[in-house]
Amino acid sequence: MVMPRQMLIDAVRGRAPIIRGEHIRDDQFQPATMDMRLGPTIHAVSTSFLPPGSHDSILDLVKRLSHYNFELSQDKTHHLDVNKIYMVPLMEHCEFPENTRMFFSPKSSVGRNDVHVRVVAEGYPYYDRTPFGYKGPLWVQIAPQSFHVGVRAELALVQGRIKTRDSHRLTTDEIYHMHEKYGIAYDSSGKVLSPNGQVKVHEGTMHFHIDLERDVVGFKAKRNVGKQLDLSAEPNTYDPKEFWEPLYRQPDGCLVLDSGEFYLLATQERVSIPPECCGELLPVDPSLGEFRVHYAGFFDNGFGGKNGTHGVLEVRSSGRPFMMQHGKPVCSMAFERTFEIPDQLYGAGGSSYTEPHPSLSKHFLHRYDSWTLKHQASRF
Image 1: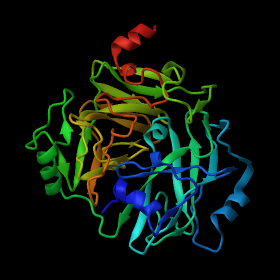
Image 2: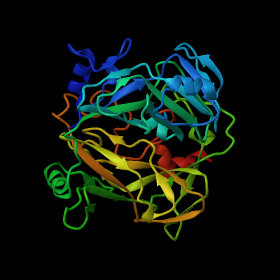
Image 3: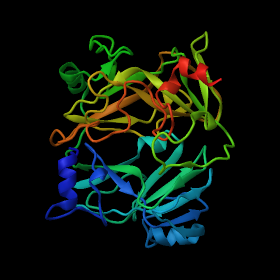
Image 4: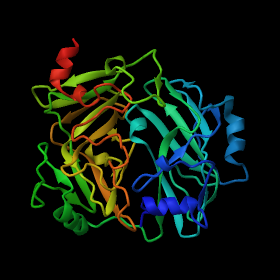
């Protein structure tokens, strides 16, 4: 199962900590995840990599591949160039028992700005997870793909979810039961969808569909933006029009994804995560099309509130233009139980995405209103 917030706190501050780090803050603990912070040194490297499992440490590889490095501080923003790769040690490290491991995902505000982040563990040739019983440091690879970005020391770009060996996804029947008990999927007006035909669950995952009949169907990242997007900036700092091009509904209900471009789109359905479990968006099935959906995949217990929130999809076409059509399946979500209901559900501790409507990242002004035609019409 997955550790909820109260168990994560004990994992850090209890008698036998399994995650250690200096000055871990209360606001790092989320309902089913823990925020992981950037350490004090950043390296610009020539290529991404995975630890080979040999005698070389991650630091050895970083030094070999590094063009330059510099110190991060909390007092000023440090510039990271688009299309460059950076490696940073995280402030937290692991002391896991043999039945415990950790999985990682970008935080929502990172994925929505097309910043690709991956976590690596010493001697383990897989991204975004540790082996069971891992004891050692963690590093994060940062690759801004659309915009120059700014970071500071102790900024959290990734979050971790701790699981034990008995963790398993809910079955199809269990998902239907959870939907009947709490409501997971809703229509655009906030009405719960019927489990008989309206909710699509297959092989333990719930399917969601693309909404291309909104007045503003989404956004396309602008190219060659000269301005830096500071990921440590306060909410409501930037004007969306400096970074994003709005996309409007087309008469045929279609949208062509241009090769190599980055898009923010929305699901038809609203989603609400039950208090007993957490969710994870899964990589798109290649049989659904030539595109990738989502960078930030974790949905904590309570996300979406009472009547659900439209999912925001981070989409990139894979190598060639691809036409999406309204109502087609675009992603799926798996669910896992937490050991207990978290002592604080999503939204109770000042969470960033609590409205039912789709949103740009918290860094932007009018991040909900930007998805409406009325707001876009007032801008020009």
